[in-house]
Image (cartoon, rainbow, N blue to C red; front, side, top):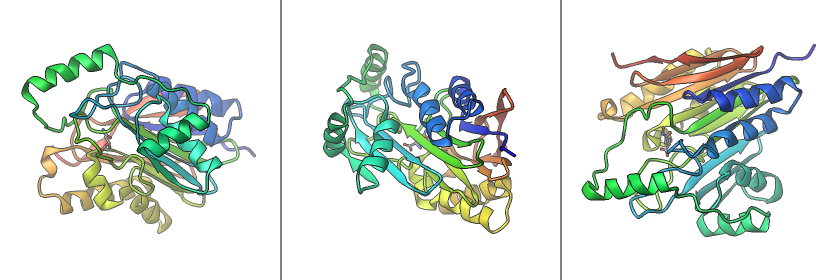
Length: 290
Ligand code: SD4
């Protein structure tokens, strides 16, 4: 019997989970569904933390980080990609067309051109205006939750019961030039194993990278924890490692191969999308800090 497909994604991105969910219902592979799903937010210029319209670094460069994994455990990633909206698609090409997992900066750019992605300007009038405003004070403070607009991480299980995942972001607004976060790092922003399930992260990349949280969650699920218990354990690790944990957000969502879902974060305000059986819902996550 075929599996009832399911899509989950970080934050309130109903159009992205709807797109991926509908593709899954039509029989698309989990890999195609996650790519097409997150592309919806990459193209959304109102989203200031993903793709085109993403906030620049403090020197005015918009640089994107993204990764993707297929059910075979293959992975592709790009970091510091400057001139293409669909970083996830360039990451997929890295996975499928090169012997490597990750390409950075100029090399990623050159590869994108070779693969036929046309050069694009990612800084929009709105993001330029916000940046010019930011330059007046140049205050670098992580914003705990950017309501409804944030990094998108997505996991899909298709009708064959196979899982794929993707994660794409412009990173922290007004980060240092050259900074790369957790989102494109396999094991941190995303990890999956087709025998077990998967996890994706959002929030303060530096804390997520130090915990290798998505890998940790998949391994905990392998040992028998539910997705919920595994997400909680990963957040506890982050809290233990970071005395300043009250000053930032970190969140994980996870799904096992049965389609059971979990989510946990530090601060109130994080939610995620779940599409199953033509029902596209936004679910508030449990959190640590009251
Ligand atoms: C990063 N994790 O670059 C990303 C940012 C993010 O919610 O997820 N914001 O650190």
